Image (cartoon, rainbow, N blue to C red; front, side, top):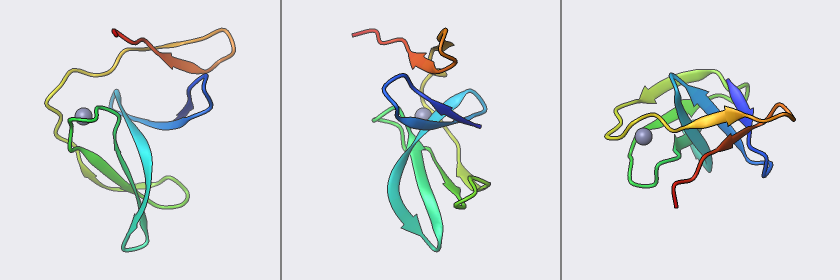
Length: 79
Ligand SMILES: [Zn+2]
């Protein structure tokens, strides 16, 4: 599912991990990479955000997020 952070950035939430649009297109599919900058997991999705392909191996825990009163998700930052 698509979620929106309070800063307006859109993320895909998939199996509790979050993915950010890289803007890159591979074979007609959009590449969304894991929001953890050290992680190489990614999704390949259509323009309708159907997830067609995943490289979904993460070397980290699921990110922490919450729903704000405005209905948006806002990630808790440790630093
Ligand atoms: Zn990851």
